Length: 366
Ligand SMILES: Cc1cc2nc3c(=O)[nH]c(=O)nc-3n(C[C@H](O)[C@H](O)[C@H](O)COP(=O)(O)OP(=O)(O)OC[C@H]3O[C@@H](n4cnc5c(N)ncnc54)[C@H](O)[C@@H]3O)c2cc1C
Image (cartoon, rainbow, N blue to C red; front, side, top):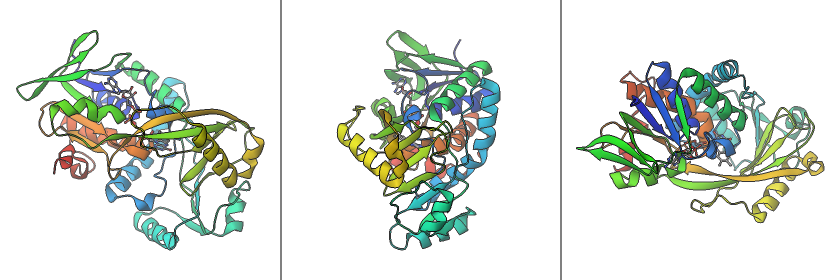
């Protein structure tokens, strides 16, 4: 049977779009050449806020705000439906070593967007995070920032989708999207063609390559991010701390993630000893308590980088029945619920909750 909607890519964006479409009663299939959620959505830090939110365009802020409102309910629903808890945790974010004048900019931005923010001296920050190290004051305290645990999240989502009746096919690589008379016809895979009604490309950093032969090129490129993981007992750190572009994220079970690099290295996902050294040194500067904990893992993921971080969401400008949801760059986890909702609204012909114009794929050609 031909699904109403076939989604290419089972990252957070494709999986959440599938959840929205299936909830509206549509027949949905998701194809991934690897393991669902096994790429960037697995590799990320799970911070549910842009890192320096005041530095982003309004279009990112709008999606982030809508998603942040949705995350607690979504995480709870997934835990109940799938029996896997994504561990949504409101641990707050401390940001130090700001640029000159940045505390004022951040305060104005926060006041304009109803985001609670406090400016703290070192003492105030240490009261919130006793493990804080050499991080320059003033610090900003964003108490409402939460995190999820990526591997648990994608596992929960995958299971919940299967219970919803969505077909998630792993190990199926889409080699080409074939069209006839300006309309999507089918998908070419190594084991044959998959007939398709409407198609959503949510293939992360690989999306531009899939779309390139169809015209209207998208400026989405892979940007490598390396992370390291410390293992420790619970409670050694309590807050996410960000300083000089590097951060530490304490998980509930005592693991602490530290990241992340921003590297233009094509589709190369290997890890490097230089990045490991640098991430370890920076993490221990931010939180000296990490000097006592072993580094137990290092990995890399490829972010779907876009020029300003504003994702591409909507219909392909030239091909009927072809949709795009990609380019979430550093913020795919935080933006995904609202992005998925927006693209599903458009695909279903519903009135979208957000103005879709800033995200239109056609803007790439303008
Ligand atoms: C180190 C690092 C830290 C990050 N930290 C955060 C953070 O703290 N907060 C945050 O919000 N974001 C963070 N991000 C960004 C976030 O992870 C991404 O923006 C998000 O995961 C993108 O999701 P996606 O679904 O678009 O892509 P992906 O998760 O990469 O999924 C794309 C999927 O498409 C599949 N695919 C590709 N090509 C094909 C094909 N031809 N056929 C079939 N399947 C295909 C892939 O196998 C993959 O599973 C981080 C990223 C990295 C790398």
